[in-house]
Image (cartoon, rainbow, N blue to C red):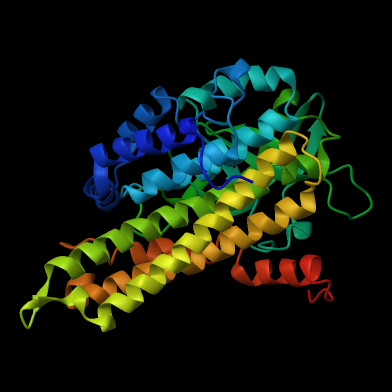
Length: 392
């Protein structure tokens, strides 16, 4: 692994940072508080090819990997515009379809992912099946050549602004009781699909929803990859999800730290900047170190994932899964710490609207919970890395 990014990656990082700077944190916050959407930013990022960097070239994308998509996610967040839908749509849905979709599905959906004209939510979590995906109750059953989906999903991001939702269901034909997952593309206007917003204490233009499926009728080709795609179809999007949510958290942490440092340089007490005092300087320096370590973990995970996709020797799913989970854990913890220390550096101003760091707290706090809790990551590392007994 080379810790120096390629010229193309550095150019991508700079270009996305410049795009984020043109919109900025105030744009993001204004959209969140007014109930608006970041449509203009999303569409411009799509036109410039940033949302499709990981889509194969033959379908209109950039032909890069999750490393490049993580750059996009991180730099937008570092510029004050953390877009959660990048994790959901390009990272999860597009990756799943690119890896396990039929050729017709790839031709139908991937060009839209590539230019940003298509947004897709991802629905796996259920009220009684959060971390335990083996208890999924959403069922798909055949009705002639069609499929009927029945079930309920919760905490599904952006359903009100996405064109379709990639729904994880259980095939009704399974008689063993074991998980036999299947993924379906469910357009937002499908009869039998309803959604209801969940009021959240999170300052974001991207809302959370409950999704209800009452015998939602879908054509045969809504099933992604066919009936035999199974677990590979489900897991195709989970490591990219963890890697890009880590990049998202790293970007927010960088943004918060930049705000904290700028205030510490400008604010004077007893005729010197407060950043000259170790009580302010050391916490910010500690946060900086933690963020850089999290960024390294994220870069390693993205690199390993892309190497595995390219068939490199010595890279297996276990190594990628371990790295992706570690990166997500490290980034969430570092981001929470960075935002907290940036708020503290501001004193009372840290909780004012004017200085723009207090609103970050709820956003980064959610990263410790979703898309997988830190406790489940600790379970994963204890079991699969350390070889300790399964505790759940």
